[in-house]
Length: 110
Image 1 (cartoon, rainbow, N blue to C red):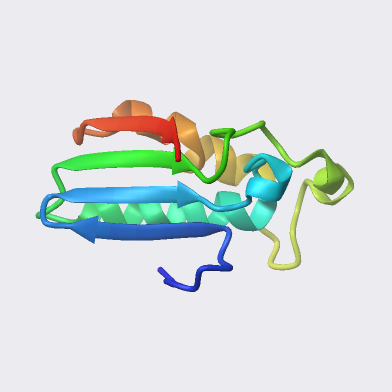
Image 2 (cartoon, rainbow, N blue to C red):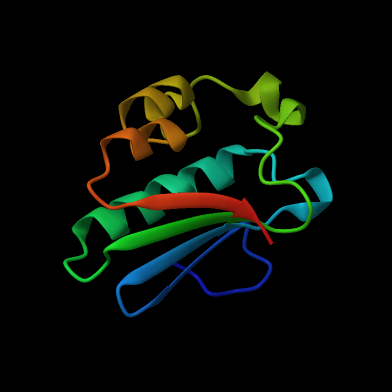
């Protein structure tokens, strides 16, 4: 995961704790396609870790997450790589995947 402060998602870890920061505070951390993809990548990275025991999911600013980014609705469906946005969400993406985690997690705003 990138550690660039401009990234829509920041993944950090300290010992046995990982933190996922949804980093789009100007749009109330709404889920763009890019943010959703990066969240899936972060979840997969955490699931592969043998060290991470706890996960904190935070939203930058005052809002945890306002939902999907409606400005991208016209682009939903198959992306330029032939991947279905709906399929990514259902198969492993987004917040639904936290239901199957064996790692305790918590969400909050900054």
